[in-house]
Image (cartoon, rainbow, N blue to C red; front, top):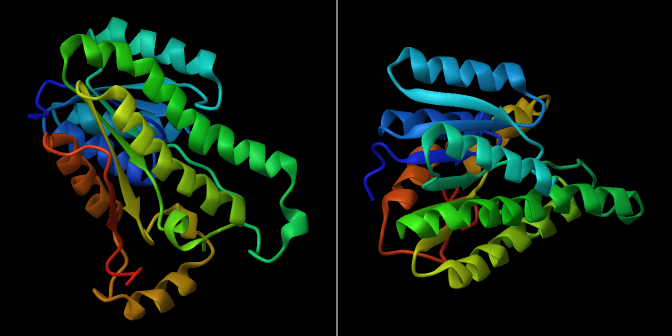
Length: 246
């Protein structure tokens, strides 16, 4: 799929991997809707970066844990651009809880993480699907995590939520075929603000990776765009982690 002139929605598109993906999509000629929940200034800055380089982007607020807000966001994007061709389900949250601290894993933690990381991705896919089906050519990339493969990560509920995203990808690929391709990109450690306050830990990890460096948001963004472009692939869970899981 040629991404030029396609309309893309990137959830959590103002920071980190989301920002890098928004910029890369625009670089490849797509019109980009940069979604944010609370980071308005970051989303606006991302849009400004795109538009100042001749691209076409808008910032749009919606909390992906609320289906009503998602549907309103999608309707607004369609009014602005005419349709939605591409969805990057990037918005995710976590809670930093030691893996063995089971008592700290409350119902509220489970609900918050699953509402955003799993149900949010499903609801976004459901909202854009009718427009993609109309054009018989849509593509969705969900952002997973190696936490969903290894069981390690910032918390037990986060790891489980990302494993659910991997399963969601396969189910959506079946449900939306043949018109819409659904794949999952699974990053390992990435140098984003999630490491804030733990930079030394990140530096200690890098030499132990096979490629001996932490992935950048730009590394992940380029791969996401390549997956969106690849028309012979759906239902795949693809790891990009500098060899971290080997």
